[in-house]
Image 1: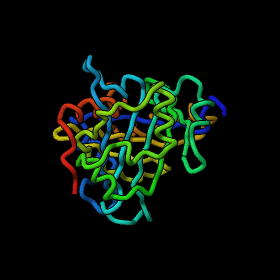
Image 2 (image 1 turned 90 degrees about the horizontal axis):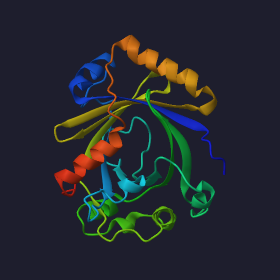
Image 3 (image 1 turned 120 degrees about the vertical axis):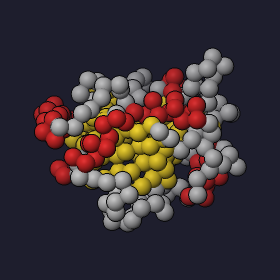
Image 4 (image 1 turned 90 degrees about the vertical axis):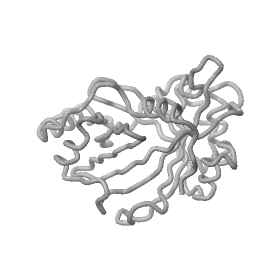
Length: 249
């Protein structure tokens, strides 16, 4: 496989104090019918040294519940489970070979105005809501909703089996909106913490030009973005400190 992505996701993150202002300028409203709702649960476990074991290796395990939330204006939406390695380093060809024919693999650039990296992910869709609920309520293990290819992905990167204490943490409420010109805004809420990400996917050949357009779009609207880094790692750490997911309904 090629070690350079075909697509790049351009991202800018608005921090909590500026979220309401940014949504107003984007003409989007929490609770509006144009927003697509989801619940997102991240799964990890703390090592004896106190570090998140998967996060320390650049691994993310994400359960996303879409079915049953919001309206269907964007067409049919499915739950999904994703395993991701970021940054995407090492023998990616051998990593790709761990997957089966049914696995959805993607090598993609992750660019912010201040940082550029790649991620490699394997996503499985169509997971039943009841299955996800059991995992989040700890009536089933995280491994129960991972495909054989996803388990092989994790074992390849870790060089060993998954930690037995792997658990889902407190869920994030996600609301996403489609914007003009292929852009999207997504608000993550976890307790009092909020992050709004404005993103778009572009061809790698056009990424530099599109990043400049992306920044001009945000500047033209007067939206203030932060520089504290990607929201996923910060939300994962916060969610793990809130406690285990109580099981959404």
